[in-house]
Image 1 (tube, rainbow, N blue to C red):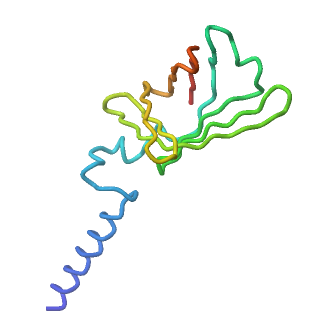
Image 2 (image 1 turned 90 degrees about the horizontal axis):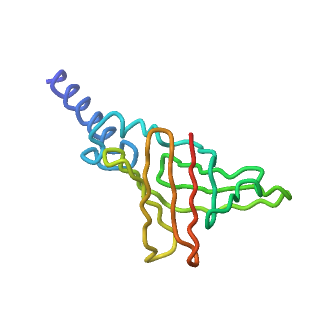
Image 3 (image 1 turned 120 degrees about the horizontal axis):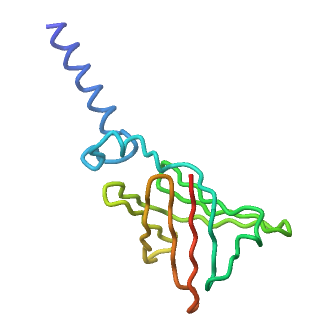
Length: 137
């Protein structure tokens, strides 16, 4: 009887640990690749253009950080020393090769961009002018 109780307790403990894995549903994480989330980390901006004009030279750095918890952070320092930051949520689909960013305001629409090995490419229209950025890990 003791052996049966010990085995049942071990199985229950494993089940409890696995259901809490990464705060999500195990069915959603179908691969080791998704569990490891290799896309998480910090990305450096290599290209930044607005309406075809290079904007990267106006900055000391522009970076994108993707956390394991589904939060993204854009942060930058201008050539004059001014700093800024913008936080939003993201959802990556590595099978489809895309990442969707959504502002943290209620009802905000998500914008989807290509997620390739080691790079995120953003392209969006701002006031009739096209902003394009490439971030690499």
